[in-house]
Length: 420
Ligand code: PA5
Image (cartoon, rainbow, N blue to C red; front, side):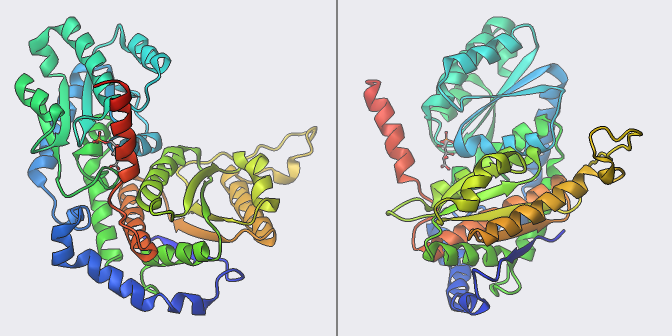
């Protein structure tokens, strides 16, 4: 599995990349130096080669237990404790058990609809919060924990609850220990949005029947593939460099374009990763997500003729999993027989080429990220690719890509306003 990054040379000259050779070398050394590793939350960087096999087995065992006793499963978390697993599950959906996501907003209507949906079903939950104090998560957990305890009694309910949190401190850890829930740890040196390959997302993925060993294998492959400081041999760093070059040219908005609807939540995860990592100190590219060809009939107009401060990063999956052939119709009443025997995937590729050419002509630069296919392995690979590209981008931009002071301020304010 290999990811290939290409770009429109009419917007970026080869010489412009050369300026970054030394800078990327420096960033690579920082990311991989022992001294830096000990100071920063960089635990995710070598996680794929430091697998905790015992923990993986325990996750699979717990997931099997919950699958066996549940028609529905509720994954409760927000931000980095939510989007990674949802991205995977949208790609590899499961009907058994039905998966619900709660704690990712404060809408009573949304919550009530889940409460109603699981009312007559056997269900279990996983509550995920690194800090253990996030309000959205804690409130939803309180609601479903109460329903579980009323339905099954406290002692059976505890077998249906898994807590994923920091292993040293936090309200959730204290509750989980007191109540005797099974606990999985989010490593201390891995921040929320970098935690997809930890129990933060792996537990929910495993309950949904996703082969987490394949996901982790894909990440391991990516660790080796992007461990080279040379930007001409490392497409992950190349992507970081290209976006920084475009940012310096006033392209302050990046839209991640998907041509496959099942990538929508991957896009949202990517958006959180880059937005929360880079948007600080008055700097950063604003990440937006678009779904083509759907949004070509709306936002395509902006990309073609709007303010010239946007660039597109297009995820191109070369061999999608499935396809439909366009049928031949005798009377050709809709005039589409010229496409008979062609496939939807073929036409999707033509749409990609047509839109890219048009937008470039309209002054919107494009970067293409080509992936041969999507499966659990390539999902793990792509996640690692993006995490490393994001960390490198943040360092090139001159900010700390691992903190989120703005998010912390919102959390503090909401507690203050609610008179905690
Ligand atoms: O990336 C981050 O750190 C945040 O998006 C967090 O994941 C999010 O705020 C949820 O935090 P927690 O897992 O502590 O509940």
